[in-house]
Amino acid sequence: MIPDKIGFVGLGLIGGSIAKTIHRIYPNITLIAYDLDTDALALAAEESVISHGFTELVEEFAHCRYIFLCAPVQKNAEILAKLSDFAGENCIITDVGSVKSAIHEALPPQIAPYFIGGHPMAGSEKSGYGHATPYLLENAYYILTPSLQTDGEIVREFEEFIRSLGAITMVLDYVSHDFITAAISHLPHILASSLVNLVQDTDSEAAIMKKVAAGGFRDITRIASSSPVMWQQICLANQGQIIKLIDLFIHSLESTRNLISVSRSQELYDFFQRAKDYRDSLTITSSGPLPKVYEIYCDMVDETGGIAALATILSSHGVNIKNIGIIHNREFQEGVLHIEFYEEAAKKKAASLLRECDYTVYE
Image (cartoon, rainbow, N blue to C red; front, side, top):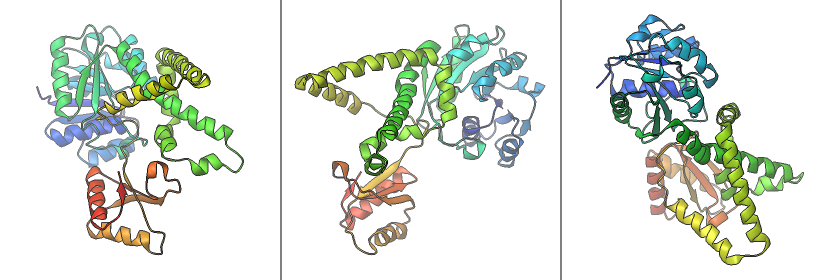
């Protein structure tokens, strides 16, 4: 079932991206939006993504088949109370928050039978409608957490619609969702930030650690560049599950410390092998709160014009470079020139071109 009208409460990065995706795939669906940011509403209307923008929740929202609640999480309780007037058999309420327990436990009785929690596991380090993209949901997991009172037929209908937007759907209860995301998303961000702070606190005055930080450190701490405000809110919203996972991790770290302290070589080998096997088995399809990186490393002869010659090869074949820089640490034999691209196709084309020109390329 393709709805005639869909409403958005909040038109930031996620709300705007969902709206743009719907408009791209279903240009005949009428989209309306509520937001206090009149610039965002004006831009969305100018792009013809929405037909009308409102700074109040007007009666017109009652005629929407779906209403996406994409406002800041601290506003959810207030907005849910207002949406109670619209929810019903013909109007389904959904949200996009990364923590589900708080909103499920705050559902007004009138909304509960018509509520399907949602978590599109995609995002960016940027915020606001201006950074929204019509492809943010492409191949991203979109977890649905319907309330216990929501009819199964409604859930199946909504799940089918979300799949039609290019996302990969999964239905979970909200408690399981919050534990899973605490383990695979929230805890990693805390660990990455903790490691960055540890290195900063233990570095010398000459900042030697910072200067020589190589690929392993950069890879494991990349997510520490995410929004501090967002992660502050997530930690407070999913406090119980995060604390449970931190306690489990501390126990795991202490066990590993003991293996190192008593030189248990076989157990240490097994520890790293088990982690490697599991990590190698992962199929990464979802985009997280930071965009994917498309990069290669290339060995270069240290001579005048070397970088310019390489850049000329790529530009003459229509390959756009996002970023280029020299890496002073060849960890794992990676080359000294780091080149970043905007998309996977450009990365593959660049690697092929450079190899044809006898450059040594590492992907």
